[in-house]
Image (cartoon, rainbow, N blue to C red; front, side):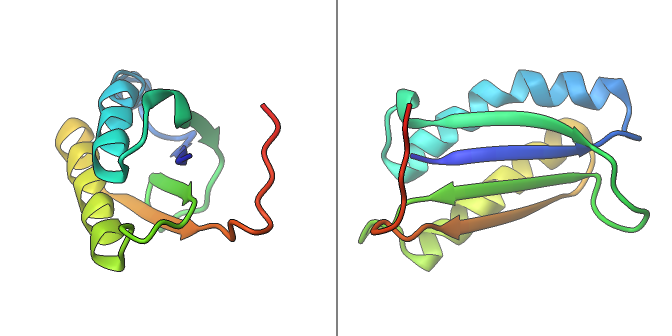
Length: 110
């Protein structure tokens, strides 16, 4: 159950938006590989936002449920891998935030 949202500053070039749209499939593949989930468990979204000057133009936020093998090191590896993918594709820095949800209070209705 990784839930990934890519927030793209509205002032960014439309070319970057197209690049990120094309990158969603490869990003999902990385999530599946790194977190050991099926593609059907993933939820990804690319959202336009209005931000303020001085913050990264691309912000990636991921929510995951805890598992014993999802160590801090593994989560950091995922974060760096996604940052690298985005930087290579767009030539822009992306901030990445990954939060582990409380499995006892998490509710999903699909």
